[in-house]
Length: 107
Image 1 (cartoon, rainbow, N blue to C red):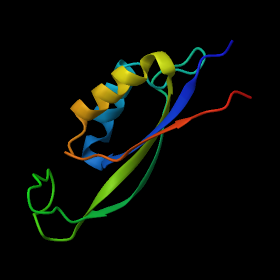
Image 2 (image 1 turned 90 degrees about the vertical axis):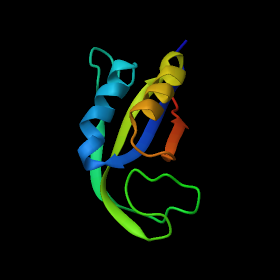
Image 3 (image 1 turned 60 degrees about the horizontal axis):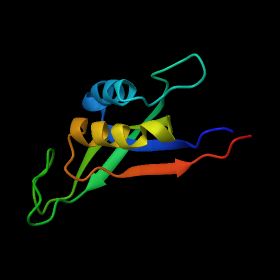
């Protein structure tokens, strides 16, 4: 029986992308067959406004801002999901990163 596998997607400032990819891989993300640390990235602009009470890593409370980000996509086996999410939250510079976890269908 095949084990559950997920696609993990997260955006991160470009300057933090390599560090985050390394943390994800070390925690077990990106393993496909006889390969590990696999991922795919695209670049774009993240836009946000920190609200009162926020402690932004980038930007100023109350002001709209934008930052060049990389969208990192990778796969995670069910047995590694919890440790990968823990590593992601520890390595990510944002206090509120948007993390997508999508269960994949085996074909």
